[in-house]
Length: 174
Image (cartoon, rainbow, N blue to C red; front, side, top):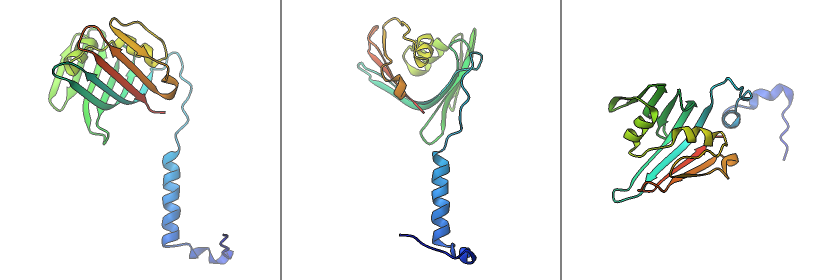
């Protein structure tokens, strides 16, 4: 079906028609993403997505959050948020110092590894995690990473030793 409007009657498009057009343009704009420049070797790495960590055992624990991660295992930042955008925690680290800021206060530690274990209740192989996110199959004692779906933005790593078993799932935004 075609609707023909004489050029002089273009002002007829008002009310519901204008609202529908504005809605369509808003949805279209929401689907676009700015082009990202190719990463240079000197540019800091950056990942966004969702993560979930579950720890089996007598007192089963789980943690899930939206995340923004930047940097490397030596220096960087991590922001954990709820799906609605409420910041749960912010971590920053550099050699010899790591800090965690959350609504419950601020904690510091000598390394990111120690701080994450304290905050999450389970050790996470930080150095290997950064390698995994870059598509490199790095060894981490007790952990087995599945990078087979990394091209789809999916990464899973399972710790079987030491017990209790822990599973880390990451879904990267595209």
